[in-house]
Image (cartoon, rainbow, N blue to C red):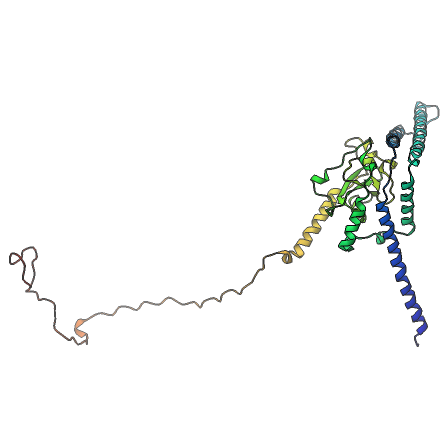
Length: 372
């Protein structure tokens, strides 16, 4: 069958058309991320707004305690409570308290939003940028930028943009939660030291528990740290948050994906409700993660350990073995007979005869002795 040239041309044009679309989408995402790093977020325009935000966090804490009481008394929807019994009366009282607390929370949220509306222009811009990122698919893992692929000039520009994300929201607040001293210990993931001004924190969605990931990072490292966060807590919902390295306020952490403050989460500070030693399914297996990382490092070191050594080993051939020489056998001595020797003697005999003995103790004459 003869190939159709028009069909081949159509496929070629289709493939070429996809390239500029993907490149344009990547450029749009980069522009939106750059605008997001230059846009600060105002968590509260005044002390009153921050006061309402902290009051909401405390109200969430009270609501969780009341809900725990409902579960302990068996007042959940799946339990059977006899009508008119003492337990039914207790459940009804607890439910009334819960209804009142939720109404107070709605009132606090309304007042906080009013305080934010006084200067919410920058927050509106931030929300629009976040919505544009979501609409253009910039939050997908394959579209997130990798800091290792950037040239030095683009990396320095990104660091300068991330450094502009300082604002008064990171420096204030009433309800504080201390972080681990990352400046005194090694970061969990080997955070870079390129001059970033942010710290990433892994937050569990089930109870609001959190722990630091990297320090001195920029927005370009969020995708890497989010992946690390999920690997540290397998099977549990996690979300990456960040805050300034100059702040220790847990409530002012901001979600790297949505820009939502930590204190607005439904389970913010929920881990405080759990008693010490109480078993829970909401936890992370950090020891297993560290063991896996150590195994990978040891495997990489054993594979290319020879290439990393600065000492070159020269293998020489061993010296050839010398041939074995047996010990020389001694020959037996032959008997000596002076009469049988056949050696001719030449010249006079200089040795004195037996008659010319010299007695040095009894000289023959006094004084000098004549030559004898």
